[in-house]
Amino acid sequence: MFLAAASAVALGAQADAAVITQHFAVTATGFEADAPVQNASGVFSFTYDNAAFITPISSVGLKITGFNVPFDREAKFSFNKGNDFLMVSDNITGLTAFTVSPVIPGFGFFLRHPGGTPEIQSFLYSGNGAIWHASQISVQRVAGVPEPASWVLMIGGFGLAGAALRTRRSPLVRFA
Image (cartoon, rainbow, N blue to C red; front, side, top):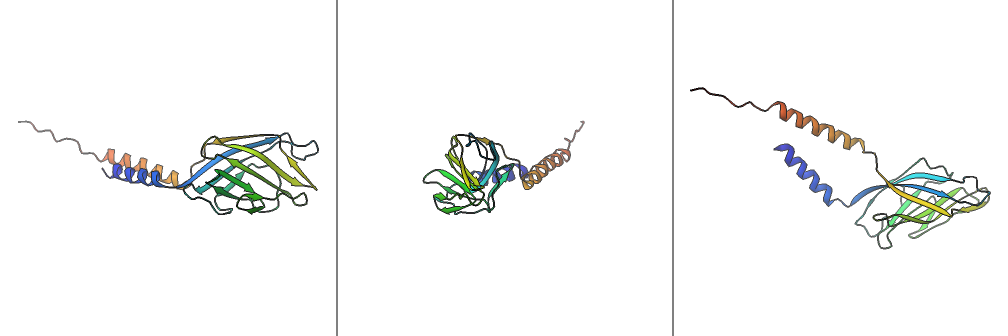
């Protein structure tokens, strides 16, 4: 009984939550011939408030793994619900803009339709006095790895269910 009530409360809270986390694998190829990285790739994870019209520019909620393009500054992102895009760069200069300089190693891209079919129309990176543009970009939604707190809740739930099954009382049999 307790376990069912706790599950209902947890599922109800999850359904009402506007904060979401999404994971995207990005691969950009077809750079100019002199580009030092010809196949740029990485997984970008975003945690943001999907109900907010604009998520402020921040590095909080952004996790980048396996990204093979060098950059010198802290990467940040912003979500714009009205225009339906996530902007990612190490040099965001406004609510809908980033700058890539040939002098400082950096990168930037816009991920459109993060809640639907994601697409990236432009991917840039820079360094060594040049800026390189990708001619082919693919983006795929990937499953995330559960957070440690999720594992603790899941294992605890199994433990409670097991304990409830073990403590069931057997029916009392009476003979007349």
